[in-house]
Image (cartoon, rainbow, N blue to C red; front, side):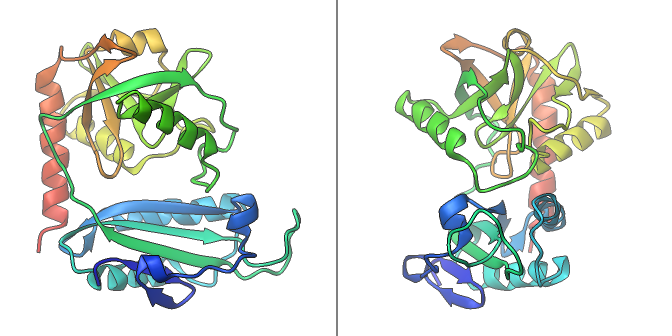
Length: 280
C-alpha cells in the first residue's frame, strides 16, 4: 500500500478511512497519541514511544484492551504493509464512542493508526529558523494529548513568516517548541529544561542526554530563559524526525554557531544510532 490507515481493526488507504461521528476525539480531543519514524520497516525507538503512549493513557484515565507488546506487534506489521523505505508512524487512542457528554463511563477505547511515506533528513548542514511566543497552553504539556490548538496556531504563524518552528516561553522561561523540544549548549554544557508539567518528555531529548553523557559532555536539566537561549553557543531543536537540529535564527536574530565541534559530535552519535537501529 502507498499509505495506510487503521481504525479498530479496519485497514484502508488514509483517504478511505471512516471514523464514527461520536468518537470522543471529535468533540473533546479526548485522547492521546504518539508518533515516530521508521526505516526499512523498522520503527525507531519503538519501546520508548510505547512506554510514553501508555503513560499518557494512564495519566488521562483511558483504559485499553491491548498490551504494549500487542500494539508494538501491530505497528510493526502495519509498517511492513506500506510500500516505502522511510515512513512516518502515528498512533492515537480516544476514550471511546458515545453521545457528546463531558462525563464518561464503561467506554471501549478507539485505536487509530496511520502510516505514510516521509523522506527522512538526518542533515549536518540544515539550519532552522524559529520565533518565540508566550506559552498560553494548559498544564498538561507533559501528556501527549490531542489538544494541540495553541501549537497549531503558533505553527501557522511561524509558517506564514517563512520559519520552521516556535519556541514557547512562560514569563521568559523557555519551555519547548510547538512540536519539538529545545535545548542549548553553553560553555561546554548541554542544558535542557527539566521534566515537569510544562514540557513533553521527548524521546529525542532523552537520547540527546544519553549521547551527551556518552561523549563526556556535561548535562544540566535546569530551566533557562529566552535571553540565555539567545546567548547560547548552540541551540538544538529535537524531535523524532529531527533528533539534533541546529538553530541559526530566532526572532530574526542570528544565534548559535559557536560550538560546532560538540554539535557535530552529538549529531554524528545520534545519526549513527538511527541508521544502526534501522539497518536491514
